[in-house]
Structure formats: structure tokens, C-alpha cells
Length: 480
Ligand code: DAH
Image (cartoon, rainbow, N blue to C red; front, side, top):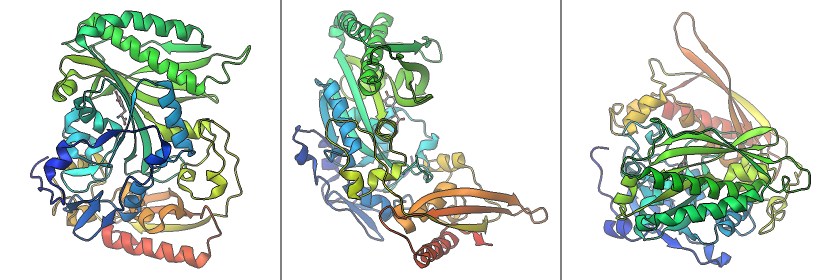
């Protein structure tokens, strides 16, 4: 990234950067509550957690998202997201549980420190929420790896809300929750790994689990050049055994019954800029392979940067919503955010139970057809390069050029900003190019539904009009 604005912080910048953003949490659940102070957005700045950040051309966080910073679903004791967090924490009982004190991280922490290339699409303004060109809402819990290693902790589990601009439907929401876990060792202690692994293998033998793992170490997924391959192999084994046993803890209930089919777990080679070798892990559940987590052997560069070059080990990142949806049979990701007691009273700390659906209020849909601005660039990738410090559209990412670029995430963002959680889905139902003028047209169906009451047609018309006005103004599109 080039030319960064110095943040005008109420607390000093050094306090924000050096004093830890993370603290170990005592396991007293009510102390989790109300950690965030309220969040305020003015035309010139965001005020988050007592710090004021000036806005610039990168600033793209709507108030509907800022409101979510105070919710902390992962810390509400009997919320499904939190129940799973607690089960994972119980499983890795000797790991220190961590909760970051703010969702704001530097772009450096979120991407640069972890080796994300400057043109990585995740850096795009259409994919991520920026406070300004220096700070953002974390897009993953890995953003806290370096500061956690710096604390000298060798085994920790960090849970947090993460933010990604996304489409709207029953399985996508721009805020979700992740858990990051890691285990590192002093290099002098790596000789203890074969014994630790033998113990884990013994325990796994007692589980009715079928592990499908055809991964190999190869030039596309290699050990790190500075690692002794014998050590790297032992770390990788420890990673695999530890996660296989966590997955059995979460999904092994049926497989543990007499005569049941084994739980199937599949390891797949993957790529992450901050691990190698890297893997994704899937579980076979209800007739489908479900992707659960990403993991790998921590890049030595990350540990060097954290001041612990004498250590090595592994890390994983787990998405809690996806896991909760399948384990609790929750059909719609938006239910996690409802305040309807018919949802919140269903669940008990420490228990995975099946969600009992309650009657939904009727939906109301409205279609919106429009012409895209002429000669636009609809490529998310080019947008990504711009956000990453490459060529920006004229006027910067928030300037004129951006207004004329149609991207579905921008459209959804405006819809969500106007309608909040009343919007159930935004679906592209038609698109065509005019044969003579070459102009492109799109038609989206906006499906509105209130989780807790009936919506009137007038109310929905009003929302639809507001959406129309804003997309015309902000995206340069023309209604048909
Ligand atoms: N941060 C990654 C994501 O959000 C997940 C992940 C992959 C975390 C590999 C890790 C890891 O710690 O080692 O997609």
C-alpha cells in the first residue's frame, strides 16, 4: 500500500499498535459481556473502542456493519456460536483462550505480516471493510497471529467476529466468527513430538473415524527450507492428530453408537500465504463433504517477525457459523443475529441440540431492473489490485471512478445498509445486453422478511425506493 494517512487517534498510535490488542480471558462467562464501547460514524471519522479514526477514500463501512461490533455472539453463554467455542476450548483445555479487544486491525496485520501479495483479491474494497487506508475490520482471526506469538504464548485459541463484504443469502452474512488455534514448540523441544504423537494416535484408535488422507509433500505443498524434514513431519502429524480428534469430538456422536458407520474426515492440500505445508479439512456429514477449516505449519517468517525464531509449530482457522449451522440444524445464517426469544431460549451451554423451527412471517419480494453504467469495469480482481496499492480508479476508491463501477457486493451492501436484517436474499434473476446499444441490464429480486413480525407492503415499498435512490446516486446505474 502506498501513502498511508496517519490516524488521528484519541489514544496514541503507539498504544494501539504496541499494547496488546488481545488478552487472555478468564473463564467467567459474564465477564465476556460489554467489552466494546459503542461505535459511532460521523462524516469525517469512525469512533470505535474509544479511538477516533479519520475517514479517507478507503472508508467503506456502513452503519449496519458497525452496529455488529457490539454484539459479541461468540461470548453470549448459550448462543450456538458460543457453545461451539466453549466445546473447542474444552477440547483443547491446555490452550490459552484469547479474545481480541477490538475488531479493528491494521492492514499490515491482516495481510502484509502474513505474506499476502499486494494484488491479493481479499484486499479489494469490494471484499473487505476499510476504516481508512491503514486500518480495517479483520477479515480473519489469523490477523492476530503475530501479536499472540509476541506474547510468548505457545498454545492458544483465539475467537472473534470477522468481517467480509459478501452477497446475501441463507448461508452468507458479512459478519461471521472464527477460531484460530495454534501450538508451537521451542526447537529444542521438538524431539518430544514422536512420543506426543504416539499418545494421540493411541487415543484416535479408540474413535470410530475413517481418515482419508492422500496428501503428499511436494513442490506445490512443501516443507519449509529451514525446517529439518523430520521435525516438519512430526509437527504435521501432531497437527493432523490434534484436528482429527477435535473433529471427532464435534461430529463423532453418531459414529460412537454401536454398529454405526465411521465418521469420515478428508484432508486436502491447500495454499495459504502464511503456512506450508497447508491443508483444508472436510467432514462427511448428511451425505455431503463439508469444509471445516484451513491449517498448516506456520511459516517461519511469521515466527521470526514475532520475535520467536527459535520456535516452530502449526495453526488452524475454523469457521464457527458453518459448523453451528450443521451441528444445530440451523437453516439460515441470519437466525444467529435474531433477538427473538424463540431462538435464544432454545440452547443450553455445553449442549449441541437440534434447532426447533418456529413459524416464519411471510416474505415480500420486489424486483429491481436497471441499466449498468456504460463502459464499466466489473472485474473484482482489478478492483482488488487497486485496493492493494495498484492503480486506483480516478478520485481514489471512494471517488467518481468507484461510483461508475458495478460490483454485486457494492449493490448488496447498499441494500443491506437500507434494509438491515429485513433483507432475506438478493438474487440476480435476469441479465441481458441490448443488441443495438450494447448496454447491459440486470434484474435483481429483493426478498424482504421480518424475523419477528409481518411486514406491510408500504414499508417494503419505502425500503425499495430508498435502495433505488441510493444505487442510482452511488453506483451510477439507471432504473429501467
Ligand atoms: N485464515 C484462513 C481463512 O480465513 C484460515 C486459516 C488457514 C487459518 C490456515 C490458519 C491456517 O491458521 O494455518 O481462510
